[in-house]
Length: 228
Image (cartoon, rainbow, N blue to C red):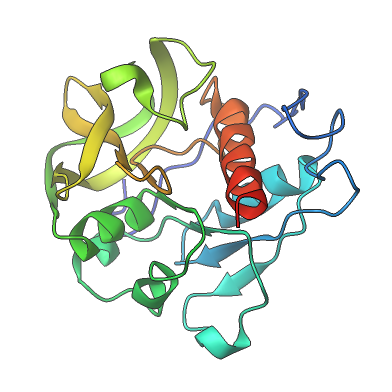
């Protein structure tokens, strides 16, 4: 397993069955007046960034993949941001393009793998090299009710792991939403309910409730937009 890259998922097709999400018409990420949400994916060099983009496209979200060095002034008006995964150690450096600036935006943000690790450190938590790196299908257990991202998913579920690093200390005002025997912080969420981190890859079809997690994030973004 090369240290700097994620392992490949199983080769069967990534068929996505999009379900109805409250507040949207069936099979869409549009609101009831037909205006799509805008959620962009920040590319931190992960090999599955396109899968995150594709999942949002299936949910009829207006989405683009943007480089993590994109200046704030060049961002369009987004309703949410996803910080993608990346190579080993990049989430530990304290520098990940302009991701720190994106975390200061007043929109929901979901960090995946390296994005999750960077988010933890940005807000005062910590990440490290994993004592037990995880690759492939693993079992996680929800903690503290699972928070918003895990709504309508199982207490115990299979996810796709591909990480050499991990969060081991959540920031103040964050709580753990999922754990595994070898990784305490598989998921985290802030008390305000607009910052989320996942150590695993929900965009890979081997994560059995990955679609629901993306649906939940889209719904969070919709509610945040309508509440402004």
